[in-house]
Length: 248
Length: 313
Image 1: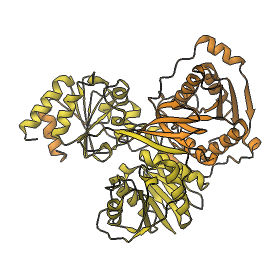
Image 2: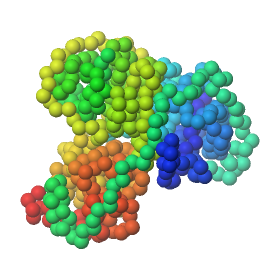
Image 3: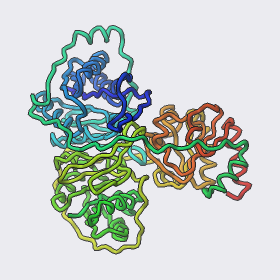
Image 4: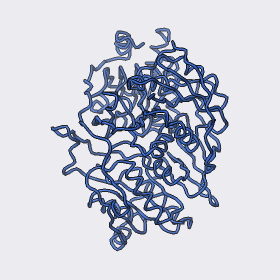
């Protein structure tokens, strides 16, 4: 069974972004970029399935600028077999990403797509579910645990009140939550091998998809700032202050 | 055309998230209908009918919807979509699960986690864990919107809308609910609690969280945690407050032994009053706290417990 893993190039999670002075977006120049952390978990899960003999091939896909090839290389270094880079200019909305991924799924016929539950840049949290809908496949989102059966998958999901288990027929789309696994660091031999693995380059037009954004971003602004308050010396003083503030 | 709010409920009761989503929907300047999809969910439907500003409640009462499985929920919502030009759901784990499926089914871009309705087609939403606020305008046609419920007040229960039954939609038959393990706490739920006491890595163990629970119970507060505390296994995953966990905005948020990583702040910085208790004076949490206490939590928390008791809590 083939497993497809979409990976997104995003600002590294340790970097604090700043809004551009003209409010057209956030400043991305010279920032450290990395693979979206949830996608890293997805790559790790797919590679583990391959190591357990449950997946035959892991294909990493990125939709983004030329530099997204580096993100694919990272996935290849962890253990993915080959990559597909669909080059786009500017932002691509989740629905357009899902449409491109659907076209790739139609061509590649995977048994499973494992995606991150959200990208930490636009925080949309839509792509996996949209892809499942477009394919008419079931979904197991926010996966905490994934078990593959014969033609089916059992997914333990992180939900508001605790955990929920669903069973889905394959093919299916899984989206990863934080505690599905702990991604490994790419090994030096892995990094060396990744350099020789193939990355196919495509454009949205190759799949007949118009990736033009449909939502119009009017402005990107700083959030309202919270002022640092006062330090209190004792627990009793703290409770007095909370009483004054009317929250006790 | 009207706006459709998909209700969050427990079948027996309507959740607060629904009342807040109704408020957001009302700001679109259209009549608001609420869809209650569940099994034996009559009581939830009646509660929805009492929400101020709701013109009509649709009920789909069928075993297919008991656990709000995404595939069947999306099929139902898409089957009703012709009558609506805006579909809204709270950004709960249920809403996040089924709503993008609805958007894709309608070939409509989704606007996630709306914080503010600027105009009937224009919204504010957080990006980069709330480090920036994006204002987006929807194209003509249907809108699909998930609502960050902490950003809206709950609609009051002063209305009396008619309830109409709708037929279930087809079952794609590709997925099924196979069980759940809920935390089953007697404490208030994190996302609707008026007070929250949260612990971080500084708590050092699951055992030590009991100290916090004592204080939380005195304050009738919910217990939360930072990602670090959850990852360390001190508490279950559904305690997590932050960008990738729950977003909360209680009247009082007490952060204990939490350093204040961006990802945690993203989940609680809209709380009315924030208290930080941390022995590290330089911890970033103090930059957002209204009241900071630099102290060893293992001294401060038992003191807090005792002082609260002394004051009759």
